[in-house]
Image 1 (tube, one colour):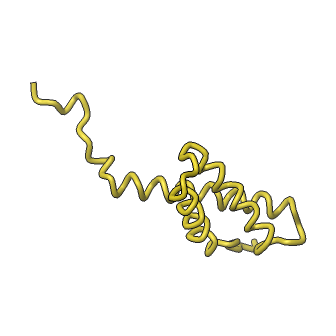
Image 2 (image 1 turned 135 degrees about the vertical axis):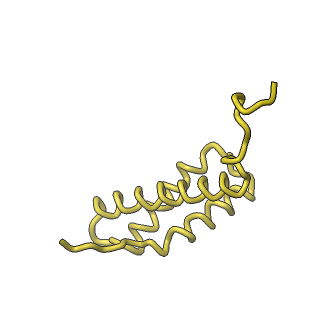
Length: 91
């Protein structure tokens, strides 16, 4: 079995480009879609320029991974896991 890691170095680049769009006023609700589009474009340019189908799926994977990494980091840093639930209130 041939195991290859395609374009993993593009993840921070995708996250950075999406963050720049966010800083310049791009609507936040469309950032995950933007991440996927950037992933597909970068994959087609840098990872698999000959095979569009393979580049599409690798780019989709890169965009979704970048979105998940950003979301996970944001929730970890904001302390979302430490919020108290309704069941934890003192009555």
